[in-house]
Image (cartoon, rainbow, N blue to C red; front, side, top):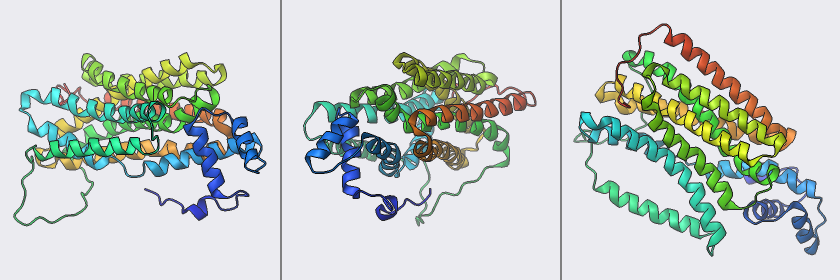
Length: 365
């Protein structure tokens, strides 16, 4: 993970104080204010600003703020919890256990923005209440985890260290295509996480946090549905089918920009979510099936490293692109680039599929 700039570096060269910039960006993102509303509010405080200046601040700093708020990732919990769920159940139940683990991952990611939007819009103390609720939920989860038995053998002398990232030879053939499809799917998730809030506010004109949270939730809810649907697809075609869903969804998202169409955005979000869910769960199932039991956590960690690298790249790249081209052109640019990434993954998957036998059974089935 790249080192974040200090506040002095982040606002270096700006004509206005950083407190003014942060205030304008926060008010624009938090309240149902237009750019010209903010111009008038700043004028009442003795500051003369152009609405285009505030727009540039929003485009420049909103992705940066999101990156800082989310820099402590969920990777540790995701990997350990996924493997623990698989190992806790009898072998006959592992298909359902895999669905429970992966679907809860996606639904949890989607519930966060939706719950935050509801708390901020409809309840008092908008700056404090979401964090208080989050801490309460963490406390409940911690108590629940304490009641779960440990699935790994604990040595007499515990030595803490960083989990190494490596792959057994027998996992390589399953890991590479699964990682490609998963990478493509999580690039799309990162793209949505980076572009959706600004796209909804600036291009479509919706300033409600509930609306923004609901659309982000739709992506992850459809991902959970895609994980269920993938069991109906032949194992050898699941990851390819997921890539097709991603491409069609991205095309719809691209169309929503010139058309300023909420319907196109919703349709694209749903299709991309289903495609991501199919490719994600199919890949994880194949990897978990191929990995030796004593190295399953290590292999799964490697897979999630690939996924979280993929989800972070669009957030960083979009922040740069918005500064140069604006939110509309940056969105279209990233739609095009992401489609190319997914098509490359699809091509490699299809070529690899022609050179190997279909997998008879995976843990995800």
